[in-house]
Image 1 (cartoon, rainbow over the protein chains, first blue to last red):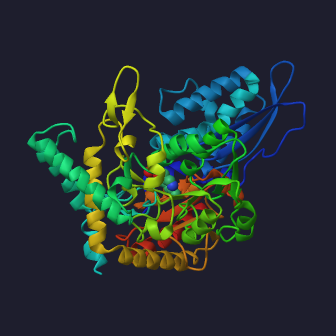
Image 2: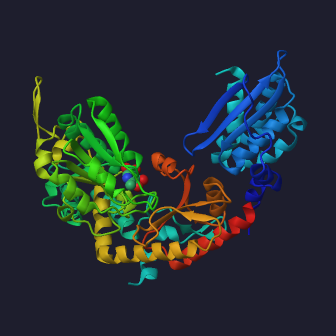
Length: 145
Length: 405
Ligand SMILES: Cc1ncc(COP(=O)(O)O)c(C=O)c1O
């Protein structure tokens, strides 16, 4: 028998994103780029972002390798963030962080959409860094770090 | 041998994890402790606890006696010529750092070569990288072949008279490879190199005789062989130890101290500054007694059986690739890659079924790069593991396959 926690962690939608990542690949230059990794587990991700002059995220893609959680989170992130302003992206990121860390309630839960499915990570504190990997890279890319 | 009875010496193994009987397969990271070791530790703290060497009262006498008895046991355990060649450390890592910072600093010069292999644990790599940076020496690696063994043709070209030190792992914690230590050491010594053997995965798994092996230094950790954490041994040949400067300064390691300078004790005390892990040392002594009562040959044979059975059963899992030697000559572990699940997802899944394994790079990042895997999952065995547990592992791997594909 599988525990409920494990089933929550690896929901079908999450496994589907990890097996068939959306927006996978690189964007042509010029664009913003950041590399993120979790040295302790070897997960790696590269995020490419195209931001228009008025601060809109027109396109973003990622490549990487890692566990189902880090890959699914990256895939879902790209779908959610595409078309948002940098400020909106930052707000979603903060809400997502709250959800996976179980750290307070999100300001706008509805805006998270499918991402809420990664809530199960809360029960697995060691996996928070997997879920946040792509988001940290996105933040770095947007801040030009 | 009645291995099922021996298993009952380990109280921790008798428990449920996530609703399943615990199957502990992370022994290469740290082994479990038999009751005999746990009781030795509590007896020490309940009856004999005191500082060693420095006082004349009864408790200190008892503590000192047990402490030094453990040194004799350790010497005998690895075939050292004298207990004075046994230096207590925090573990393998500290032992290697001690050698790098004393013998290394004293003897290694710019232009020298420090030779290691491509399958070293970071603890037998970083101290040498640091030494090379400090001294201007060059660090070279013997490549690892696809089958997980060392490239013997490359050894012939890399092992030259420039090699000051040859440090390598006895049994690889990531591949299970058992390196031909005796032959390699003989080759290196013929060219004048000093040799260090990393015995973290071999001590407690097979009989060790440092004089047969011929190494100058041998290092191991207590916690991987039924002993407590925080204690390990550095063996060094006396001729080398005597010529080595101290590393840490402090109490216990000095003969006399003046404001202008100090003189140091002979080995091993020269290298044991400060109050040691007394309970750890005594616990390690108990672990050695325990292992020797079972017999290291028996433990080796059983480990071999477990490894071979695991290799055979695990290869039934579709999409599995087991790293390291396939011919049965391997240590009691199997690290593998699955085409359907990342190591961390698999380890999480196995944990929810009570099976404890480790996923990741196992502190051998260059090796993971070499085999083009981001990491592996490792099942590592000790003599208390059973064939039933290996069956259970395979069952869980097959369940994982269903779950993740
Ligand atoms: C081959 C090898 N060398 C060195 C070490 C380091 O041992 P410790 O962490 O006890 O110092 C390990 C332990 O993981 C090991 O497997």
